[in-house]
Length: 486
Image 1 (cartoon, rainbow, N blue to C red):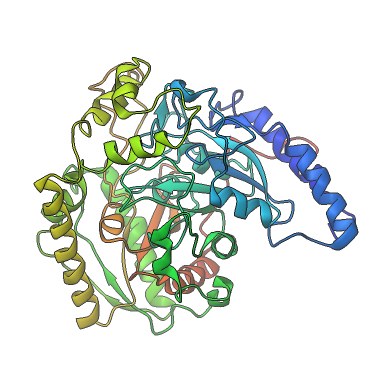
Image 2: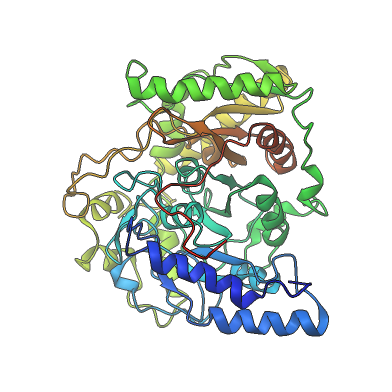
């Protein structure tokens, strides 16, 4: 761009051509909800700024996909639901403002599981995995993961409550960072469970994730949770991108499946496990000390009590959020459920949260279970001098999309099969998934590193060293370069 070989307009145009060619045609990934009608005009503005005064920030002219759970005041924010298909907020999310200030072009809002669960929605239907469009792209940041993997944008922002950044990244051979809960402002984002909700990067490289976190991390007076981050944000996360970052690191390997439905005897499990075992061996080859088979007592039961049993936050948080929007088409979770517009599968799961509140005894039990387990895991890490815990993001490959996923509330779709993502959000700890390779079926596998609160520098150091030594990512065959494009 500085030399004049490339302009922001040309770059944005190339990405728009790819969306046009592949999203509703070809593999029909259906990753995009709304293209930004001002994307090219914004690119022109940035080109003018570059000529006059130089780059406006570290993301100057870089196209980004933004999960449609995040408010933008210049295009609709749908939350994946037909109820909000025409809803344009009158304010903008903090993260959207920060991205724009850094020079990014929000090229489109990406599809998502309806009200932040799953990978289907009444606003758009089904998103698909670019590595095999018959299979699920994980959720609920399904469109961001599929879109970044298919090269609809250079970078993406996902949201996760339980694994919605790391899941789509893992099954799409991408890097996905779940930051510490207090690190990134959630203002302007539809909440699910505020004690777990966070926003973070979905990218093709660890370096890109570090650059993005530099832009979005830090205190925001509109989200007081971020006050905990003061003093914990380094001048730049890119300082921790070290090729020798695994040398001397102590990694605790969790081999116990966290999903009760995981089947260790299946061929599918063994295909994933062989890739994970090689990844652990690679970490050891690169200088890490492997502390194998770290055991967390009663792990599955703890996850149930900390994560699955937390149905108490959603209704209060949803109602409070919608009350802030005078032009919202509905104002309560009750109205959402009574609308009759939700995908039946999502309506059923959302109903579990209705009539609950954080004043109930069950919520105190959730919080107690979390604190007990947090102390236990911190003690295990301290006693064994561990820098991070390591495990596969999923123990199974992404499953085939069920034929009745849009119509059946009791669909047998198993998109979460083998899920190991719930530990990090239950504790509030950061976790990063990175490509570990591909199974014999050609499907991506992610290896995940989890560290203590605000230990993102550690995650970047470990993941970057692993990435630079292995280069496991490769783009999906379903969305090749267009004729005449680089």
